[in-house]
Length: 261
Length: 254
Ligand SMILES: Nc1ncnc2c1ncn2[C@@H]1O[C@H](COP(=O)(O)OP(=O)(O)OP(=O)(O)O)[C@@H](O)[C@H]1O
Ligand SMILES: [Mg+2]
Image (tube, rainbow over all chains, first blue to last red; front, side, top):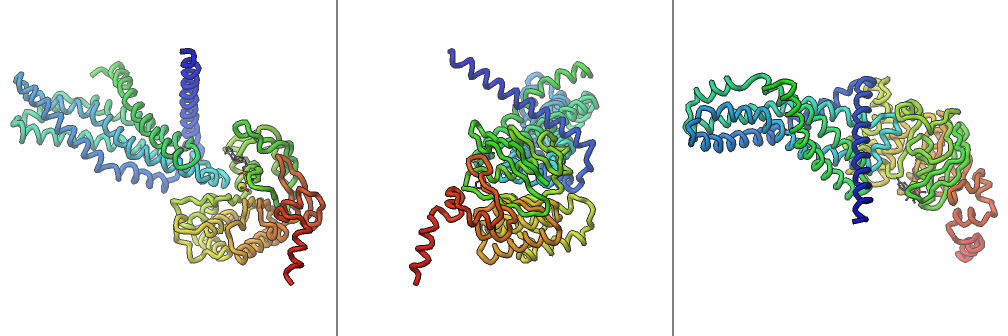
């Protein structure tokens, strides 16, 4: 019992230190953004790596989530003869929650891990020191292109997941559940507002910031050796996924308060 | 000129550098010797601010670089070339792009000029044929040479070499020694080299400093170091055996 308290204190201090480190990194990114010349080539490379190459994963996630969600709600709603409400329910769920969160989780797993592993390896093989020794800031050369690319790519990927989720949901609704396509679409459009789409995309912007920051921070702070890089990678995925899930709730509440649905 | 005053560095409770006082004169080549693990690489990293000391000052041209932020250090570091002990090549880039990196970062050369200077540097370190390879495809010695080309290509004022000849065969090692001398002659580069290779040290050094127990234990010209009677220095430069034994060994050949 007595031993628990100091250990909890140490844990808390470590978490606070980490949070401080992440905020300092964000500050450095913002400063660099306004003081250095943009690195177009590195940034477009990263957009390609983060955005373009994540599309397959994100589309499959979006499509199958939309499909299973349609099947389940369709069967339940059929019992209470509300088949025509399936369209709006699927679309709101996809746009406001499922697409932003699931896309962010997939990207955290795929890209967050890759960023942490790459930067971590550069750290332990002194490549970061080599950059610094040449007068190039690792934040300018490595972090900023990834950060910007993530900010560009994640909302676009989220929009794709929304569209594919709804599209594949509609196919399931019409072909498998026998819901009238015209009802599905017209009700869906009637009950889905621009506000919902904006809400979903705003979330994805926040998630992009979290994933990029946490992955870069974890990579930069990797301990020596292969084990250190492995741990940094795992932590980047776990911490950014949890952050996405927890932040999702608060952003949703806040957004609803600012812009009521 | 680089002046090091009262430098102290502690890693997790272990004092690596205790009190280093030392001056590196412009246009000279200073060689730092000392047994493995004594803190030579750590000392070298303090010279361009890659590590921050726990106490002491490092003055580069009279400016104390210890309190400077990373951003403020950047222009000072552009005057430095650094060869890392493990070469530290960027493994996402080819040898050519690695060597071109410092030139591209300066943003004042066009690609033709960069290409010419990089190829020139690669010829000197005998890596021209490997210019399109990635670091993972190179041997340890080749990586070292690529790192060397990257450190020198922008013709920096100060060049810091961490074991430039380790892992190279004697002929290549001698080429590297010549390169260090040439950079000093032609471009008046100030070099600091860490090495275990006494042949190379005697050839390139204007001054040799020995790091021992966290301090600069001895400083002298190659001549002075070679003829010193100090037992600790003698033991290091003759590789443990006493001079008597070495002479004895030579006699027994015929
Ligand atoms: N980043 C670091 N964190 C903790 N300890 C370190 C770090 N860098 C170096 N050390 C310690 O400092 C001491 C000196 O290391 P350094 O690499 O300077 O030795 P060296 O003289 O260059 O040896 P060698 O000739 O083998 O390269 C070692 O005991 C090492 O464990
Ligand atoms: Mg060393």
